[in-house]
Image (cartoon, rainbow, N blue to C red; front, side, top):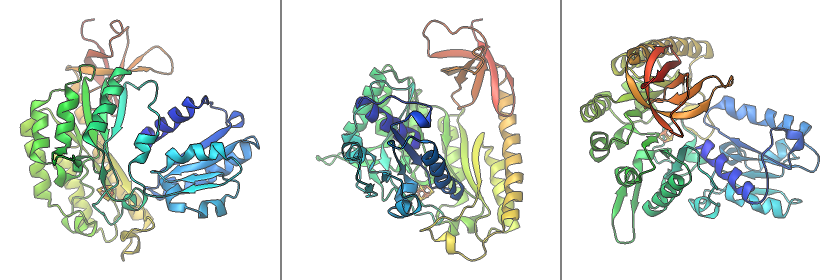
Length: 422
Ligand code: SF4
């Protein structure tokens, strides 16, 4: 979501004649787009701001946008009096106000809804992989998560607006659409005639756009994986056979304390249905280890679900207490050294499973999306349908963004391949 937001902010400044620079000392405006999901990222923000303040030219405007801005609010000005603006994740379309009135301070951390999507100019070009937000905020209220506070309650964009954006992206260079939302499969929009649209409708409609060859979505909540959406994996070949569906923990007790009210049997049943619908589908997950009260046996159950599902790539984190969340004040917080130890054990298992899957790809051919060259310029980088990076030698067929690649070798982190017709 932050990649998307940064892209739109850059496009807005571009439309006003600004050009990007890698040199802080050269910049007229510096914007730090921030994430507050974990404490570590939040802590980094103010030290980064200090470095920017010391390096920038005196006349340059600088500020923060995004979730740390929303969380810090006016306090950000107290901690860093030189800041010119502090804008929450739903207010960054207000940025032009500071450009017009640079001597004032601008603070806006409202959860205003969806205005930003309408008020921002569309970028002149689209990246090959174009993120399209379809909803913002989340109603799930997991006890560890700051998102309902920073991004607010769930709001879905109108079906027509999303399709307009996907068509625009396709016309301007996008090959892959990734629908985005904190609770993306909770997308629900009812038009003025009472017609209800779900994520499956967006996928079906987007698949009709000839330029769009690949569709995916992130991040999914298990109980929102409704049958109509599962059916899409069976019927829509442009929908990639890869799904991030976070389980977070394999322990029913921990899930209860996390306020994630699904049973593990129910979760596994959804995966079963997905595998029936699309036998080649692969799943990834997010995990939190060391949630308050997590016992050794709870943690063993997390390892167990990872072994059973065989997630091909995952994001695992130590639990990080966040302000405004119920879990931050729960008893039985887990000591840092235990969290660290458990994370290392889980990571090692997840890496082993990922390596095993990567090895199983050797000898197969896959339709892969061209991403660019590596730093040496000697290799081409492709992305498989399972989001693995694949390094290829050779020259891609003229102007082709999607090529058939034969996988020739695998490591834990990436694949090597060659053009199938070489
Ligand atoms: S479903 Fe995701 S975004 Fe929503 S509260 Fe839970 S962790 Fe946060």
